[in-house]
Length: 275
Ligand code: GLN
Image 1 (cartoon, helix red, strand yellow):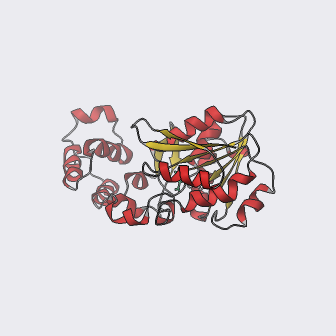
Image 2 (cartoon, rainbow, N blue to C red; image 1 turned 135 degrees about the horizontal axis):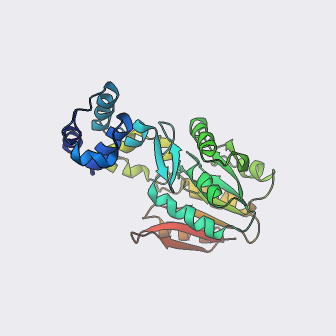
Image 3 (cartoon, rainbow, N blue to C red; image 1 turned 60 degrees about the vertical axis):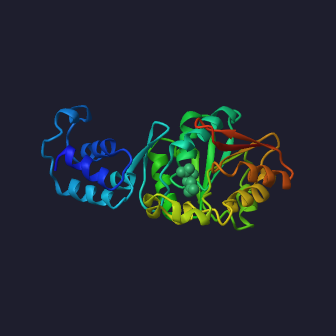
């Protein structure tokens, strides 16, 4: 199988950037330096692993799960079925959190998934510590491995808990206070399920959908968790581009003022609540 052939096969199934993805697959499974690919377009690199990987990708199985790792904030994360693939949009939350966290802060990462938010923040802020919470034991196995990979194990603990369970906030906060809550919870509206890219059907539904209005997890976080955050602290949420107004309302209903911030594409992306 050649680089040209892989590009064509991926293009034929509607993959947006076939040559980029073909290069990632080829370089992952065969010992060829990426910069040489343009000159070796028609060289045969056949291997059973590569053949099976291309076949999976043709079926729109996520590239990130095929190679088993993905880059987020310049760090490498292990990913696989059972945890959400870290998205580049979420890097904005990490950058803002690093600016906002006070010295020596302990923060809570709700719906931590692969652990990418907690781990990337801790990597940039060696003075901070964190607790990551997720309902999925499988996701937490990835989170622990990602903390190890990125050298922050001694400053993070991961806890399996359902943030929709109203008894959970008190239990979590009984071990000590938190200066901030960071969270990129599942926020896709269930009604949007049929319009999604085929790749998303391989990611855990539990990590994608936030109920009919996309707000289920924000509601639990705002009403159940924010009251426990230290005075002078903050919460920072990633939101779907269409949730800015709803979040303003939700915060106001609970007695909080919030600021909705846009991403580089000009879309509502972050909600900052000062406490
Ligand atoms: N916090 C993780 C991330 O940003 C997982 C989010 C989720 O499961 N919805 O990738």
